[in-house]
Length: 309
Length: 277
Image (cartoon, rainbow over all chains, first blue to last red; front, side, top):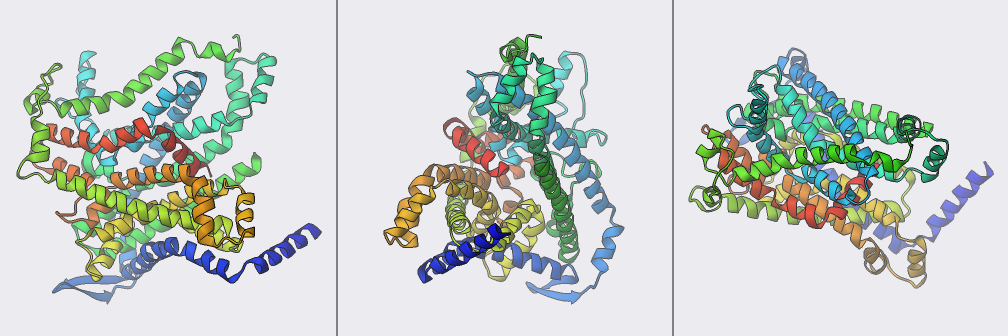
């Protein structure tokens, strides 16, 4: 308690030491970022919430607004596209992120075992992170093409296929998940590699002396030590997977039917294809609320894992 | 069961890594190669082909093509938004970490950057579009530059915070004892120390702006369209020009390849620091 009081005292003295010039610069240095965030996140969000209770019609280039009450929100419940969008995004996020985590961890383990070629492999593996999402869509639209894509050509060599990767409603979502795994596994790999490289080496020397096998080392030393990194990466990749848009836009446009209808795509169509600003805003607000909810879960998972570590 | 870590880097490790590297590289190489093929050769599924430059010629220089304009637009938006974003982020990182804000101010600010980072940009794009239309900026680069700068701001602030915290406090205190004002302190003491971090953040921010599609699609017109928007158009045409799409995809990947080869260390540093902290 005395320590805390002393700390508060020290802070108060600190505040006094700060002169007028420094106080001014404290504000000035934060101002640009603050203005950008206020203007492009807070204000549009407020506008979005307002619009979600309104109907908007365009007359002579001007918006005519009228109140719609809770109509838009009520309509969300019976919107099968919105339901499909949420369901598919959930499936997509779980499938893609699980795949990325498993493969990323395996790759990180493998790369951490080699010494000479480590930088070379790391250089190759970061490539998909740097390529534009839309180009990744283009690459896989070609690769998965029914007639001439490399995927079906390779399958043909072993006497299988051809598979209609993007046109078959039963596997289109799986194809999109595979493309996303290709895209983001390197990111998980990088985080896990950084995590593995920062593990305390003395623990490994101790297990070596105890004569543990490679499997025992992985199960009883590496994995427990990596749990915080694994939980945090999983939680945040899961939330970020809700952003998926580019690849779907190019590969399937949500089809066939609603097989790959993800939530960003549903939102985009309400706003920009159908020009339903009021309804689209209600949908946006709902999605943002759900993302915040997920984020709270993710943060508490992180806190719990930190508490354990 | 020798337990030596050397034993596990035998041929199975190398085989698995080689296969993984192939899975990453083959689709990219195959697509770039498709840019050098004729449409017929690609459709016939020929394994060998004699490379032609027709697609690149068509994509870059044909009368109907605007790819060079798109390329220029992407560079303008990328450079301008990176300058804006990284400047604002560096100042903010200094402000949040090295001035005397109350703790809750810092926490609320960082929490908001996190929430903003997680929101699907499509959910905000329409509101941005309406705002730009209200102030008459819907057909200029200004809107997209501001949007990209803000979209990348959370990551840039987290990254720059890591680097600003690495500046030794003694250096700052010594400068303050000498009576240095905040701008002098920033320019002469902080900036030289964080320069490598600044480079890493700038490279990442530029790449992310170059790659961004959803917001660019919503906020650009024909004359201001960026490279990803142009590529999406190729895929929408009724009769897809697959080889031209491949050629333009190859051209759009150039910055990524350059960055991968020459700034790989920065990228790794940036991506891991930003995500872990």
